[in-house]
Image (tube, rainbow, N blue to C red; front, side, top):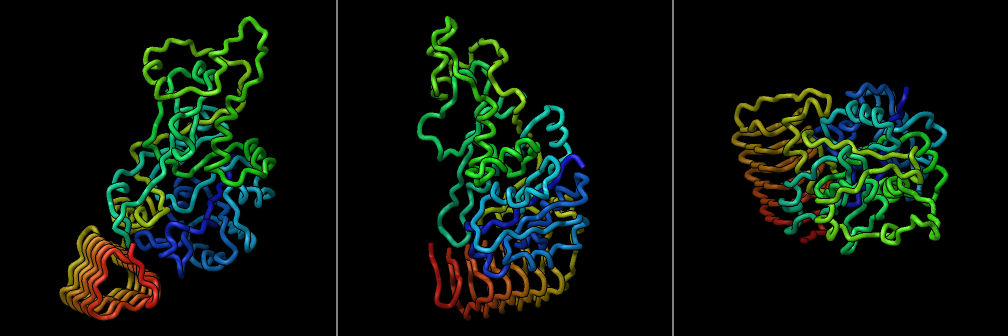
Length: 435
């Protein structure tokens, strides 16, 4: 096959650790389906028959048990050595002997209905060395409060420059810049029509040609794909040889190392510099983006994104997960059409579930109410409890008449009767955190 698929599932989930005391990030439930199943389904819909999944050694057995023989794909689950704190590029180097073709790398936290085959076709047509998926950043993520906190989640933006064909001219994190965005004048001459984006999200799905994989293997100082390899590969497109300063054609203005894009914006609008091909550029290396502004897409890499994807998934469930959404009937209780309820749940009289995701084997006593929340597996919710905008992890017991608003409760906890929690993270009877 022309491409090999590699799923990165060895991350620590540092922005979601409250949810991960008993489950790896890639197995967190999204609509009662393990998160990684959404990434695997992207590959399956594109016709892939197999994939390499990179995991942490301590989590391999749990992940293997959860997904193997349930995906329709032949999975090679590879564990990184215990104790190693490796980035995604380091992880690719670890499996170098398994890489025989061009590679498609995607993160285990990608939830999307986009068509990977369309991105592959673009990659082929443009003879691209590297193609990345870009989608609009979900505005709703900036507007909602983070569960367990009174604050809104901070998101780091990428500053991305694209030409009219969506060739990548530059990409860096906003934090890498101060007031100016460095860009060589010769690149501006070659690509006078550059559109700068700050509202596009890197979906962490990359198609990488084998020669660039070799570049990663040889440059062991590159640890991550996103932060180090990607900017280096994009910049390498425009590597220039030193021009003879004694030449009559030498222009010190054109040779400036950087320009201020803010000042340049007006000039570019009326610029008529011819887009001549630069003979000194490395013509064999070209990087493109596949921009899909219409797909349903999110990266589940923090608490806000996790809460939001569980609210929105029901409309896209079958296509995104590759599974059929099960329906359950509860005669004496109320479950609205925007909720998902797992298997073997018990809802007592006048219990209600609205805009929520409920896991398997959960029990709701009389008049227990859940709104806009996530309740994982084997949770018991007592009589007249009220849960709003919260995440309740597995094996939790809420005794009667508890009230939780915008909270996170870690696994295996007991919330005592009459407790009233607001904007709190509950990780143990001795550890109650308010942010």
